[in-house]
Image 1 (tube, rainbow, N blue to C red):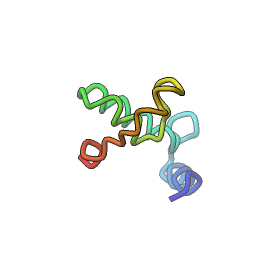
Image 2 (image 1 turned 180 degrees about the horizontal axis):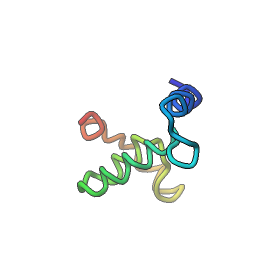
Image 3 (image 1 turned 120 degrees about the vertical axis):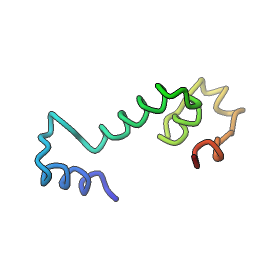
Length: 70
């Protein structure tokens, strides 16, 4: 599902652009999961965020799949 589809559905539901965006769901999910003490690296991997230095990323190829499946 594209970002535009999500954005259009949010607007149809009455959410203004300054209230909620498709990207806002990612931010909300990250915040809730961090507050519940989920593994930071698993959260960032699920959101496709790069973490650490170039060197650490070159050596750490973990994908945290079991935690991400939860």
